[in-house]
Every structure is written in structure tokens, then in C-alpha cells.
Image (cartoon, rainbow, N blue to C red; front, side, top):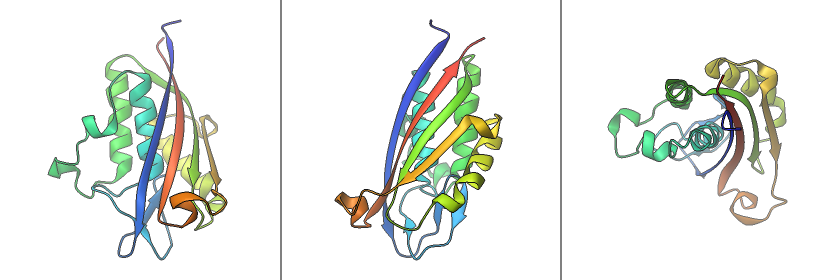
Length: 160
């Protein structure tokens, strides 16, 4: 049983003017973008935390701290690739990802197939092992007020 593990990740970023909106490794046209030290890709950050948690390697902030200028405005796909590398160095590989993005706008469903393809390629797995869903919070809370976007992710990893 020690050859499989599950991890959970959660991330949130504030929506602001003057930033690009990157979610799932792709740029999405929108009037607002996500604020963060990196490109603030909320989905990739949640996936990184799920993967790191499954392998008991702490979290994204520990491994890629926002106090380190090498991560300033970094493409989160690089962080995802490095996360998968950290897991591989301990003998772990990604089995699958199941993630949900919570946002009122923009509508994300049309972008999901491309997000799946991009993230799968970065992780070196088949696209059908990356499940991404999008939902609203029915106008409730900070996401409902369009103050930010959040993402939840679950990862399954294994050792041969």
C-alpha cells in the first residue's frame, strides 16, 4: 500500500487590473489577471501542492518561495515540471490529476481541453489522466464577487 499516495492542493489568487490571466498553463483573454509573485496560475499551483503533498514534500511555497527572486514572474509550467522532477527524484510518478477551478468569469469550459493538453505534456502523462472542471460559486464569497479565483486539486502518485 505504500506504493500509492493521494495528495490534495488548494490555491487562490486575487483578480486585479494590469495582469495577464494564466490558468492551466494557457493565457486566457480577460479584463483582469491574477496577482502573485509568479504568473499566479492558480490551477497549476493547486496541482503542484497536491503532487508535493502526496509525496510528503511540503508545498509550493516551501519548494519555490516567493522570497526568492528567481521565481518572480516565472511561468508556472516550469514550477510544475520541477515539481514532477522532485517527485521523480524520490521514485514517484504521476498517475492522475483531478482538479476544479472556481471562477464566475471568464467562462473556462471552452479552454479546458487545451489546459489538459498543456499540463499533461508538462507532466509527461497522457491527456486523459488530467481531469479539469470549472464551476462558479453561484455569486457567493470572494469568487462570486469576482475578487479572485480558486482551484482545488487531487493527485494520485505511485512508485513501481
